[in-house]
Amino acid sequence: MYLGKVIFSCLAMTLTMTSQVMVSAQDSSTVNPHYAALLNNSMWFYEAQRSGKLPSNNRVSWRHDSGLDDGKDNGVDLTGGYYDAGDYLKFTLPLAHSLSLISWGGIEWYDSYKKADQTGNLQSTIKWGTDWLLKAHPNSNTLYVQVGSGDVDNNYWGPDTGIPTPRPSYAINNTATGTDVAAMTAAALASASYLFGNLGNDTNYANTLSTAAQSVFALAETQPFQVYTNSVPAADNLYQTNNYTSQLVYSALWLYKATGNTTYRDKASQYYDQFNLASVPVSPMDWSDPSGAVHVLGAEVDNSNTKYADAAKKWLDTMTNPSAANAPCVFTNGGMLWCDGYSDSNSMVPLQDTSLLALLYSRLDPSQSSQYTDFAEKQIQYMLGDNYMLTPYVCGIHANSPHNPHHAGASGGTDISNIDTSPPEELHLLYGAIVGGPNKDDIFYDERNDWSQTEVALDYNAPFQGLIAYQISANAADPPYVTITSPRPNVSRSHGLAGWLIAVIVIVILFILAGLGYYAWLKRKALKQRLAGNKEYAVPA
Ligand SMILES: *[C@@H]1O[C@H](CO)[C@@H](O)[C@H](O)[C@H]1NC(C)=O
Ligand SMILES: *[C@@H]1O[C@H](CO)[C@@H](O)[C@H](O)[C@H]1NC(C)=O
Ligand SMILES: *[C@@H]1O[C@H](CO)[C@@H](O)[C@H](O)[C@H]1NC(C)=O
Ligand SMILES: *[C@@H]1O[C@H](CO)[C@@H](O)[C@H](O)[C@H]1NC(C)=O
Ligand SMILES: *[C@@H]1O[C@H](CO)[C@@H](O)[C@H](O)[C@H]1NC(C)=O
Image (cartoon, rainbow, N blue to C red):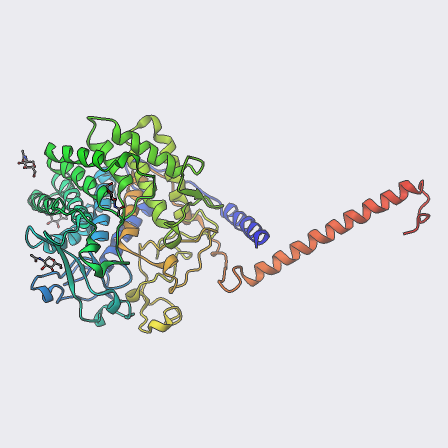
């Protein structure tokens, strides 16, 4: 196995090197068309995830109006919003997390969206989500957190025209509290409010979002503090967090940035100290825990102290340096950031979330910035094709892109027991969707049924938007996939390695053995000759 892996790696590296990496010079006034297309496609993916009554300009021809009775069971309108992944469930927590990251990247690199002519798409992508969050908070004591039942939905594989019912809706309220989800929702609304009010073109909408953000933050602060799955067990094992502490601080920081009201800055600082967030063990940032984001955002918005910046540096240095004390991540042979327990089911997520925070922090601390930008740029290169599989982990942009995202609607299949083979070819290209990604050996099988590698989800594309906007702002060279002409190395699950590769390995091993044998024979012959004083054949064998 080990030898096979090394030989495989060498072959892949040779392929990478022979596919000539050409760098096209970029004029700073123009936009690299590949990155513009990636931004555009990523937001096309969000359009493919839209629920509710679709507008006539929805770009995804195979999507229909759907989920039109959502909320009826509780007499509220919960139509609209986004389906979470390749299924038809709607969750508030990962949506809010995703919206806050899209807004953050949009705020920092708004000029990139302008250059790429994508500010309209950016605002409509965010608004489709925040409009739904506004509906999900119909009064000050209520926040809807889930639509659809995991059990019902997980037994369905098919198009949006046959979504199974019932689709129950679940809420937290001021007695059955959900601190984590309410806080994350406030963060999403506040970050979007900042974007619409300060960069976009809709201050009325910004005010609406800000008012709702403050209202749902008050709900988050309602005692008892607890994770929302205590109140809504339906979300157990689907989107369950471990704690609510980092979410509370994250939302207070966003509210301070959006409103300028120092009450929120002070609340953030007080919760940060009360929950000891500066010294919790470093772990990856994702929808379940925004601790890493808290340090970086705190360093950005509250410069009245250095505690956030110190923690941000420690977080980044621990995350990006496997030899740091208690480092939770390593680099694979191919150079991908790999965090055990996080990367296993979606390796592109810790890679992207960490890279995004590294880039955001690099803007605040010019003395450290190249260390963090170098890290992030390498990870982006990996993600966009500089890897053993010669694969950009973005659907629909290259022949080697993933062909089998785990997405019922895009697949065209209806047979849940034959997801991989029915139909053999994905019916619709899911442009711009980021898939889970390769395994720790940098191997990607591209199997529709393997959700750990081919799942797509709202939170996979959220950091991607910021990473690509950064690439545009940095005038980055063409993404690696642009010059990849070799097909993806053929790997199959049954053998781990393709038949031809095994044949190559066997031949190589035979050559090595033959070489060793010949070497030993020469040695022995020389020895014989010396011992025999050049009288060949005199020494008995
Ligand atoms: C964005 O995508 C649409 C259709 O999907 C296409 O018509 C448009 O040209 C794209 N724009 C850019 C900048 O790639
Ligand atoms: C903001 O811009 C978008 C896209 O250019 C446009 O559709 C929208 O109507 C504008 N909104 C306002 C309030 O001007
Ligand atoms: C709050 O939610 C709980 C759990 O869903 C529910 O039992 C309770 O009736 C709700 N309270 C109010 C005031 O709606
Ligand atoms: C700031 O926010 C707090 C908490 O919501 C509120 O009580 C206070 O009136 C706000 N201050 C200003 C100046 O708006
Ligand atoms: C959540 O954090 C609080 C404050 O640090 C701590 O007291 C509590 O034990 C934590 N809860 C869990 C489930 O880890």
